Amino acid sequence: KAGVTQTPRYLIKTRGQQVTLSCSPISGHRSVSWYQQTPGQGLQFLFEYFSETQRNKGNFPGRFSGRQFSNSRSEMNVSTLELGDSALYLCASSLRERRAGELFFGEGSRLTVL
Amino acid sequence: KQEVTQIPAALSVPEGENLVLNCSFTDSAIYNLQWFRQDPGKGLTSLLLIQSSQREQTSGRLNASLDKSSGRSTLYIAASQPGDSATYLCAVNRNNNDMRFGAGTRLTVKP
Image (cartoon, rainbow over all chains, first blue to last red; front, side, top):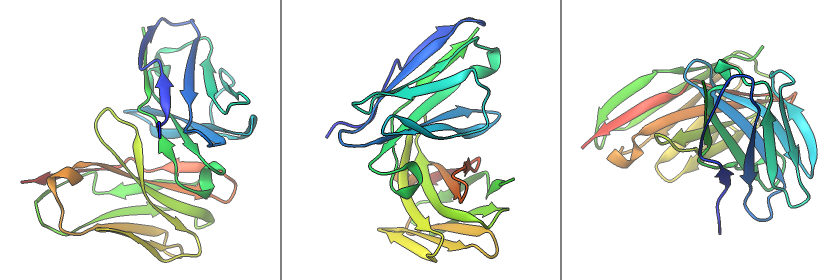
């Protein structure tokens, strides 16, 4: 059974640009959640999508957005990049809603903003 | 506001030792608590999930306890092995669907 796949694994952008990250969940999983991990702030919850609907969102500005497609694949977008957006972005999938059961994480997309 | 604290930040033990990792949280209105491990440069691996109504969960050499009234959870690792070396994170799911992570405990098990 294939795990959670995140693409791209590494990317470099400059300030002001925008970026789109992709997450393919485990087959049959309906929930995809996104997280930001930085040395300073640690791991923070961004948002969760379940059956194409955003279920909840963490405390992040509107520059961070996402969506989920009918096949459960999800994308997150960050517009007008800032230096502080440099981080490892992780996604996780689960059969039911995020907090109800086991989360399966991808290996992350490492974003560097110059 | 929910704060999640993990102590110690780092721990080094010889192989075979039993050890305890601590997680404390300030708001007792939690839905559940999860323990994860993270290997360098990797994503998280789910270890144990404890519902708010439960006191402990066990999986193999791992045992996690939860005391909501005192705002504490512990992860007990028995007979530690070098392969257990990783960063261990606890995460609290609140009743309002918010999720907060601790900063993690970096564990090194020496052969």
